[in-house]
Length: 283
Image (cartoon, rainbow, N blue to C red; front, side, top):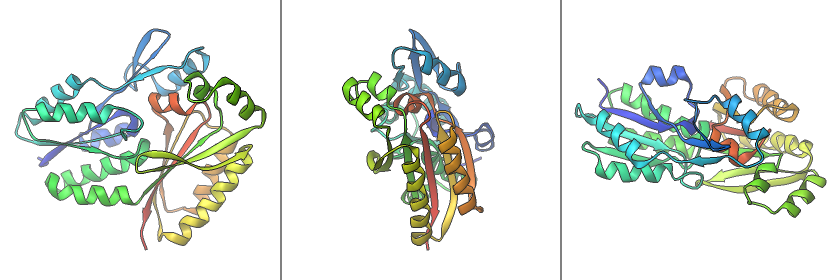
């Protein structure tokens, strides 16, 4: 039996096969649309959520799991004397990791909680490394340096091409939203230490595609290779499929995983957004 068990949340976009193979526990986030509460990946599929979100006049309201949900699960998993390593979406996007920290303090067994400083597959890279460590018989203390090393080799970018959700959510004003739409402004963001910063802004998706041509060359110059690529999206479109094709051609040896984004990430990013996450190999 492994020396510790893994807990994460639904934003990490693990496949059903990965969850089953490593016995990972996934705590779902929830979202409310038109006064109906849905649990991410449990009571609604991601394509269904995207359709409802696009047809809703109001922005869906996403919620972190309750502290009690974590506490019950931690007590269940540690009842046999096992430790738990709990890895979650960055605090800047969700309070999930805070709920986990609170529960860990009250749990009967030993629970270590980590803010991944990422989301989606960028966080999943850390979860999967931890799961491999557990399968190898390592302790949590022995696994943590390997998980940290994966975090340090991870890059995350996200393309925002539709500002509708940002207007609905009040992140930008309606007037600014109309101006940026009129000028066809698109943005590519980069996540650094859990915070999203602007990488570039440009007119039209061609500017975004061109930026990924540059990113590919930058990665080839700085790193030995790409170990894995995660692609999470809010509906694929012509520009995102073009970027995916470029990545496949540039890094044929990289393991590539494509999925819809989690409901909470879709809500923030909006329709046709796509996030590219890289796990790099150092020179």
